[in-house]
Length: 208
Image (cartoon, rainbow, N blue to C red; front, side, top):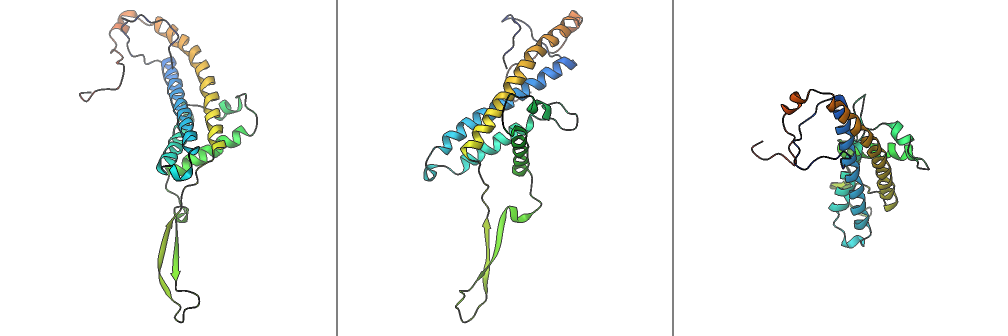
């Protein structure tokens, strides 16, 4: 997310911890997750366009699983911050958008939790001697892993489009929220602001 307020290049940026700043940070995090979903879907479509024999089976599943997890992270639960079902319903999209949204969240859960039903993960079978054998018996036990069904390119495009619309909607709100956070900061004691810890850019180093 790009900041809209003009900030001098040599400005001292300090960390704000106000309700308006928290909301803005939540919106920025949601936008980042949605952008990750969009990029994952774009790369997944490239993978799905390859002939099946040329694909690395791990890559499509990794991209799809990552997109599901990032999408699910955008939604709060039980009054927590994040997007809500109302945000989905307010989108200018046609079709059963809510039904698809709920399916995506269910898929996310399926990819990130251990199933209650063991046979969702693998089949176990009794390997029998041939039906015409004189001595019919159980020769062994066979275990066959069940491959996770990967969504087709239509479903991937739908998720990418849904993430794009949500990102646009959230970005519009975040731009307005930036002005609210700025106004709140301008009402704070300026000397107290200069005593706040600087906001470092980038990831923390090992010493942090």
